[in-house]
Image (cartoon, rainbow, N blue to C red; front, side):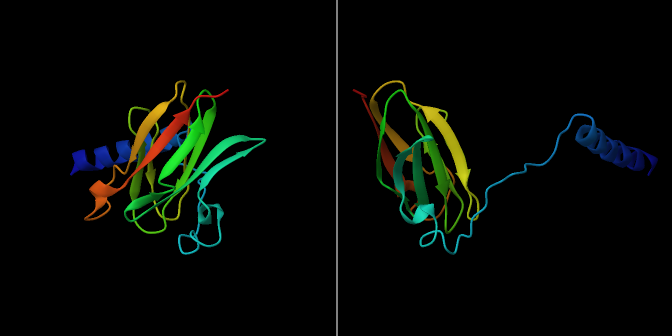
Length: 147
């Protein structure tokens, strides 16, 4: 009984100390989105590549059992920001052979920034089991040489 009480107090004390002294906090500033209107009233209603004064952004919608767009073309040597969300179930967004790998949950916008130094083709896969046809969920990323 005393051991359990001691362990419980030590556990709570460790949480309080880490939260106050070490500034460890749960994630904040998470970008949320209403999954019911993702397909109609958000930037995800028209997924694709957007280039503006902030750089290159790729907007991707992950839904049963596909990514939209299915083929993405980006230039080599420039930072690419991927913004991904899902209107239905939990998915993954992994660009095979790179460190771009995020969980895509309904109601949240996942974001990853990466640069592809060389032209080539990459496979994009869902790495979170999302249903019976999960293994068919993939897209292609084509990194093109820049003039």
